[in-house]
Length: 67
Image 1: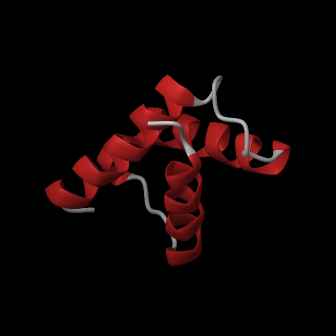
Image 2: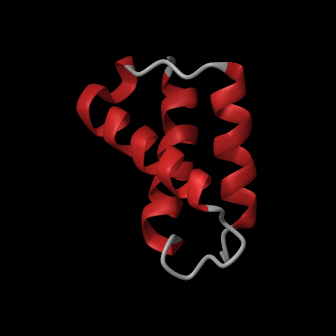
Image 3: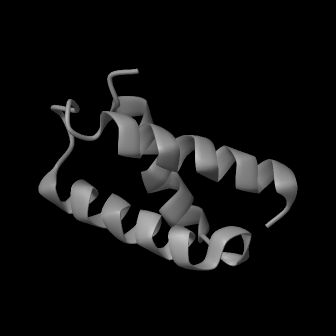
């Protein structure tokens, strides 16, 4: 993951951490998925690899947040 990609994923995950409690349109599965991704990123940082499908889901959830 390059620096730009790391910055982008941090934006998504930080927004998730900040707004997850006020998001209404997030499914239980999406909440669990995001919790897993946050945990992985906290453990491995920029070494974390996300598949294209995982990134699609992260972006989809991000777009649902009440930012």
